Image (cartoon, rainbow, N blue to C red):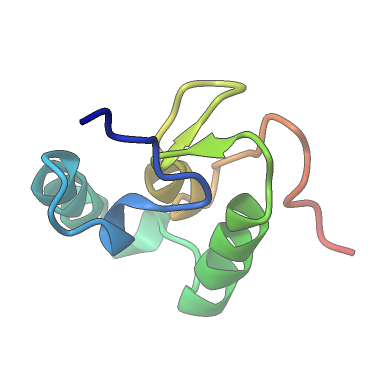
Length: 85
């Protein structure tokens, strides 16, 4: 049986994935001083989840795991979708 890619999913929602633990470890290693607020992180992730370029937690424009990019203060969306409105 062929497994279809999880469109609109982020890694933390796919706890059975092989990447989940590694992404969680990497997120935990980022110092709090370099992270955006929880509100901003959730806003960014919401934008990513609505984007057609998200597949299995990965941005098809740049190849990053969106959770790792979205949590960082200096993180930028390659499609410029995170700009404050």
